[in-house]
Length: 366
Image 1 (cartoon, one colour):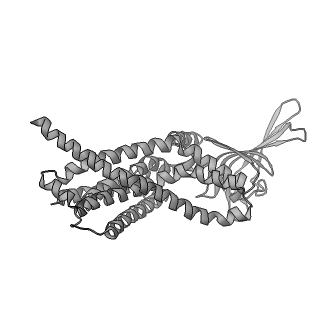
Image 2 (spheres, rainbow, N blue to C red):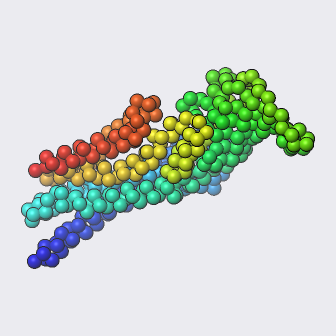
């Protein structure tokens, strides 16, 4: 008898998963295509203005797809969950399952497991594929499309930049504070022998020039001897503007969770405030679980749909829920970056709030 009761449950789970997958794959494909179309027309002016080669444009969009997938998979899971369960309700299949003793919670278990696996897969995808592809499409955009000279070498721990005053080594570019931290300028002779090193602990862009901290000059003699002296702060030591450095800084999307955490540790060890990276660090763990959170909310919402629901109503509900989630996530992220909320709270607040709402809907479902 226990075996006979287990088989129908397994059949129901397989059927629900098959229905969910049949909607998920086309929806993901449609979302990616729509995203690429919008992005293409948004960048068309840049492509035409710089006479970008077709191959460069194609490579740019191809390498951007992995990042797009991480951004749309949560809404795609939500839409697929609402549509698959909504259509089952439309054909009275949910009613038949309930009449046979299968509760909404039992129907939701295999779907939530699938959403959880998708979330874990997204996390692994973000750690392995997305950073490399993001760095690649940024390179294609700057060098192959915009025809800019490759003036910087970026690593997970800093930036090497060939500027007007020499070769720069920069520990951190902080756009929020319009500042550079840990700047060292290596100046050479005409024969490329090291002449002197200027060490600038910080430099802040004022809109028209740079305010710097005290400068340490290390002059290197022909015999290799080094003479160190202190120089006063100078606004003319850096000929570049802040935008020149913002173009070559490495965004959080270009780093994996482990690489970003190592970068924060490295900056903190040098006495540089890396708090602006902390929200991004926690978001790298929180955002992949958007699929699980939205799936948990979609199941009780779909269970409340009356018989013969309209497709427009289902899609509208999905759009409203997805829009609300991203608005709240954007709000809590801003609060975290401004220091109002702790980074951990700001990154996970949206998931926690929607998780509580979904739990309440399950409890109150008749």
